[in-house]
Length: 105
Image (cartoon, rainbow, N blue to C red; front, side, top):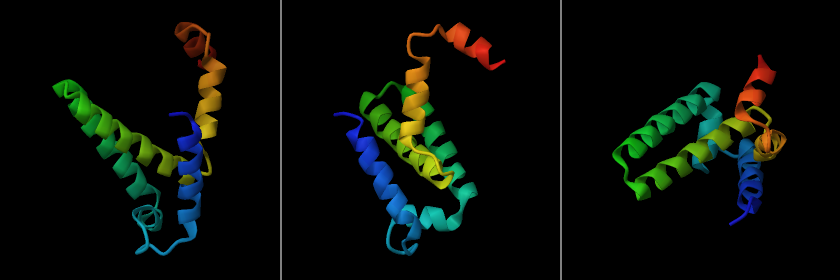
């Protein structure tokens, strides 16, 4: 699997911005606004942490997918995309984590 799925999902998320809230889960999140979207990102973060703590690999994968999905909804709501995140990761690639962190301070 490649980053193609991220691009495809980004396009779908964008298309749901103008949809009726009853037509899709994503459209209903957009209709409820940023606070609800952020609440879902927080909820999925906690569920991912709990899954990791419990060590169930299938549950970790499932919850991380939920976290990524809701994070992508958040990005789309804010006018950003997975490409923005991938570009940032590419920028950091090959740079010491200590050096990268120091450059932000």
